[in-house]
Image (cartoon, rainbow, N blue to C red; front, side):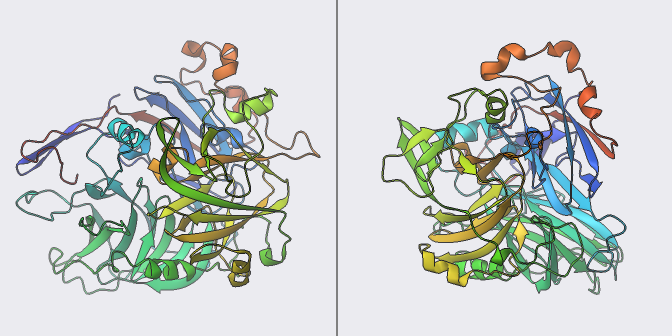
Length: 575
């Protein structure tokens, strides 16, 4: 099965595009499950290069084997398939999956993950009349292979060529370039009803502001935590972040309404921002959307964005699955055992190549995954010596891990010395976002921490020239990825891993899967894939699950993204 390739005609502009699709869809299907379900996902890689999918925000309790990043899994080679198996243990909320290797997320390959409450646990708000997933993302007309070469050569991604909403664009910003007749993505609703909109920024580098003409956004959840319910006219959603809003269809439907996602905080005053538009269509609408688009915040007003982020609070009275420590409302009283102040820097040359660093180290990906090296006690693959602070030494490539204390309580301060907003994500955990401010973090900054209802989530933004502090309870054994969600920063080395080993119970982790793919120093252990991985999955691994509650078979296909330009001198318009 091949991805259907379509020509999209924009007046004089004609683009030939191939994206990474899933089951013939772009974006891919939503994985809709319920708390504590066991999930089996069979991935067939029809790309022309290796692939891994990672599950943004899924905690994989004691099972980092399923994390889908280079430190825990060997890539799925082109033409192979592999079966992921994991439990959505003690989680609710809105998440997404995406390809974690080779800059592939720039071409798509993403889809939603919705984890519903069990029936015995009520929602902290009336049951919505509908549930709608919305993906917003920046888009570049260059293919993902060309983009990664640019990044390797020190070429900044720059302002995106367009903003997509559920894979559809562009906004008709100039009728001379983008002709009439190109459809907007349309979301159909019924008047008087209330819908839950799960909005994910699945882009690669651009913070986006989300808003709906004449409608308020009532924030109720973010990345697995119910929030204090507050109404917003718009919301800044940074790369890799997810939010749930309740939106009431309370307008008179004299026309349709604009849904807008526009670029934010690009630090590029000489270049105009970019806007994506979709349509909210009432069933009794009397005409097309009209009037100006709803106003965004000031493009470069980081104070507005930071104050908005600070206003998001955890709903400590909501009954639901909760971040660890289980049921804790007193994270501010737990003794901190480890402190890491992690400072990032812009691109710099290391050994003649452009790289980015955290605390002066640029992560070097070994051919043997870290988790495999740990399992087989292979020396020399990595070191447990990631520095707690920036070191006074030249930057270097290294495979250095944080040696996490099992059941310890870690404080991480992200200090952003770059010129752009960065988002940081930790696999395997939800952390409490307790503080953020401009300037340099000091010991005295702890006096301003929120020690009661800081929201627990898996991704947090760090503004340029500012810091963000999080607290996390290290009770989930495994090797877990800590990374920049900005794809250019991640690709150039702004990631590391946290090793959490339970010293008391050797079998506290789920054992190595029987369908493990081997590579690097363990390549000789690899079995013949022509038979073993012909959509058979891994039966013996599946036996370890007492019930399979959700099965999603994904066929991923695509190759390149190419564009053809007839009159734009090499620069494409939004797609």
